[in-house]
Length: 395
Ligand code: APR
Ligand code: PHB
Image 1 (cartoon, rainbow, N blue to C red):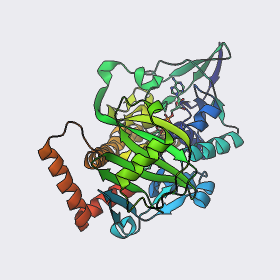
Image 2 (cartoon, rainbow, N blue to C red; image 1 turned 90 degrees about the vertical axis):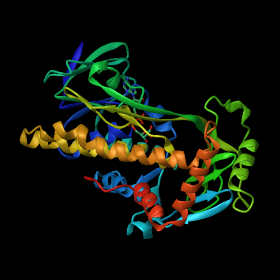
Image 3 (cartoon, rainbow, N blue to C red; image 1 turned 135 degrees about the vertical axis):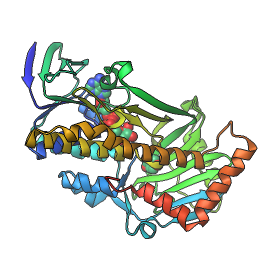
């Protein structure tokens, strides 16, 4: 078995793993990234695309924000449509200047790969399977098979950035981890289409037929979602049926003149809230989807992954500069404070805007009253705006 030595062994080359390796590199800390899939596979995945200002700032400071600054669409507001009536939340005014930036995660992934590989980063693709060893010792290691040969990476720390189905969290003994979970009784059917978005800003739509979201990737690329049953059969959803349903949910007035066209991608995703605590076992640190999942309604998934990695990179950096472990010891608690606030907000937006098949008539009326309140009250709007654009760090 061949062996190499590095400071931080990173499992997974999604946004969390790659950004961590970039931040460590910028601070002079070495890492090796092990990825189970090919680069093309990882770059091809289509995910959400709304970035908080803090995420944009961190990516820019890390040196991967050039295209994001050029092509990202800055949004100062978001719309909520209820039974065909549109309401605009002026996030920028309500928060004293905060906006979000619409830029696909697929693009972030490409920007990160381009930068990391240009700097000769050590990334092993198609490393499978990966296993974690001696995690509770000060000499943990990763083992993997590549092209039929076994390899070992000896390191000081392991960063588990391998997503919800990865090996890192699964390696932690069950009695060392507490998990919290909620599965929602619906899913999202999503399409991409080369059509002009119905509005310059995102429209979250609540109707008796269910939730819909009108989002975008670029000036002429729409990203659209429909609430559907968790076991929905994708083959029963022709593009025509999807566009008709989107128009019905948005209402005749708002959807007038909506440009339709063939979808370029179509998929179904279930909705889940999940947190694993603590985000550390020995010298293994979990970050991103490996530790938590949010329903996509508040667009927090990528932003949370970036927030974790920021704290983790600073903690590793502090350790290598001073030998102190206090930031590493505080990592899990520091991240979980932000994670639970984002979990609460994602759960709240999901509960507020979807049709719940099992909700009583009373609960449905209360849901509608809460939505009315949020849309007419300055305090209600401000709560939504400050959470949506991203809470400040360190609170
Ligand atoms: N060994 C090596 N790599 C693995 C393994 C494994 N056993 N299991 C998974 N991976 C890889 C996956 O192939 C993927 O490239 O880990 C990576 C995890 O990436 P993501 O799932 O994108 O997770 P993360 O980097 O935490 O990004 C979070 O992604 O799902 C969205 O909403 C989420 O936007 C958020 C972001
Ligand atoms: C997206 O554009 O994919 C998107 C936007 C906002 C969300 C979820 C997904 O809340």
